[in-house]
Every structure is written in C-alpha cells, then in structure tokens.
Amino acid sequence: MSQKIRVLIVDDSATVRRTLTDILSSDPDIEVMGAAADPYAAVRRIAEEAPDVITLDVEMPRMDGITFLRKLMSQHPIPVVMCSSLVEDGSETLMQALEAGAAEVILKPRIDTRQCLLDAQVRICDTVKAAARARIRQRPHAAAAEPAAGRPRTPEPKLSADVMMPAPGKGAMARTTERIVCIGASTGGTEALREVLEALPADCPGIVVVQHMPESFTAAFARRLDSLCEVTVREARDGDTVLRGQVLIAPGNRHMLLQRSGARYLVAVKDGPLVSRHRPSVDVLFRSSAHCAGANAVGVIMTGMGDDGATGMREMHEAGAFTLAQDEESCVVFGMPKEAIVRGGVDKVVGLSSIAREILRHDRS
Image (cartoon, rainbow, N blue to C red; front, side, top):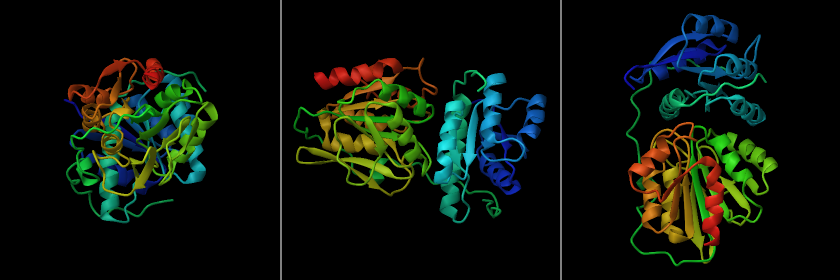
C-alpha cells in the first residue's frame, strides 16, 4: 500500500496498549494513530479522525468490546480486529465477535519468550494488513502482560512447507473411488466456510480444513459449525480417520497433514515452525494431499490475505487433484485465491455459493 495503515488500539490495559503499539509500529506499512482505554474514548478519537483498522479488546469497563463492535458496525463500519487473551471459556464470545462483523481475531501477545513475541509480531501485523483490505459491510444493530523489553526484533524469513515435508515427487497416486476435500481459508473464512458446509449433505466426501485461527478458538468454531450443518464438524486430533460426512478443522497453532494407510486417509496434527507465516498452514495441508491423495483429492482455496496455500494448490493440481478458488466478488479478501490463480494451480474459479455444488459434482464424477 502506498499510504500507511492507520490503526487505533482500544484496550483497558496500558501494558497491552504499549506492547501492541511497539509491535505494530515495527512494520513500515503500519502507523498507530492513537490508543484508547475504553470504547467511549475510542468514539471521541474516531470522531476526530477515522482509522483504517481498530484493534479491540473483548472485556473492558463501561462497555464490552462486543457491544461496541455491534454499535460500530451498524453506524460507522470500520475493519475491526478483536484482541483477546482467549481462554476456552471466552471462545464462544469471540465467535459472537465474528458474527457481529469483526474481520479477524488475534491473541494478546505473550512476551515471556523472544520467539513468542516474534510470532505474535508476524501474526498481528499480517492480520491488521488483511483487515485493512477487507470488505466491511454495514450491519443491523444487533490477565495483564509484563512490559516488553524494547521493540520487537525483525521476524525471521518466511518459511515454506519444506520445513515440514519435502515437495511431492512425480509418481501418481492410485486412483480410488473415495474423494478427499482439502479447504484452506483465512480472513473472512469463518463465515464463508459456514456457508459452504451448510450446503453439503450428510454423506458428502470427507473434508479437512485449515482456517487461520488462534489456539483454543478452533474447538468453539467447530462446535458452532456442527450445530448448524448436516455434516459432523469437529476439531481434528492426531490420528483421526477422514470419513464421509465428517469435517476435521485443524487446531489453532498446530499444523495438520493428510496421510494414507492403505485405502484409509487420516490426519497428523504436528508442531512445527510457522509456514507462510501461519500455523496451521494451508500450504502444509495441500502439500501433504499432493503426496498421499494425488488425483483423489479436491482442493479449495478461499478468502484470505497473503499467499498461504498458493504453492500447495499448484502441487495438488500437478498431482492430478481438481482445484477450486473462490472468486474475487465473493471474497472478503482476494489475496490467497488470487495468488493461487496467478501461480497456475487453479482449475476453476467460482463464487462462494457454487463451491459446495462443485465439491459434490466432482465427488460423483
């Protein structure tokens, strides 16, 4: 972007405000225009100058973050990134934040180790950049950290899926009658995935999903989808078998790989470094599918910023998989699908409402 992204930080903790200011200011594309201790102070600041993005705490005095978010989205829509300590008890509240219009959710940065701070720096800056590009539509009204020692350092170089497994070879996997669907998404993906999965019948092919999310958040996300869909949806566990009518969501902060044992597909849930600046990474899932499923797989890349999944989708395509990308018009952020298209890994580009139909059509082919 030619101009810096102007961010307003809203959090009742002075320590968090300082830490987020340091993290965001370390990125040359971001400018922290101010900070507010509660929504009332934020409203006064917004009246003076509208920010490009707001980072918003969930629990604050006088008015909680969800209530403020709903008021903001009904009156003056601005991209909002919810920032929370995110214990399991609060994850359902954060699902409400996404339903209310938040572009993304991030964890408050941990500063107990250098690596935690570096990982937080990468995730938070990338999330704010993604939010700045999100299409925000008006909606009807509906523990303190210790101070960081200096500014965060420059993050390590972006890693590829090579750190988790080698690139797939040229040998083709034997074709089977069973299909496996691999889906990758990021910003805007929570609601987009809901629309796709709600349209699928209970006997659809087995599905594995990487949605960029914080740790502990994916379990609540899976429970919400399971309550809405005919298919069974749950957070993946290491060694789970991929079954028809079941959707496995990669746990936050863990990579998920597809594996094959005879005619059976299963998932491995693993630790590892950030890949394409994410953990879980779509590239890791897609590459593992190219390795073990080949032409038996369907790959779907959906709304999100950046290029995670673009290389892996090309590898799936080259291994014989049928690959889909969500179109620009229906994406909140077109970055990931666009990059996959540019790299030549996409067989077909379709709108969000057509993805489920394409999955089922290929399952019957």
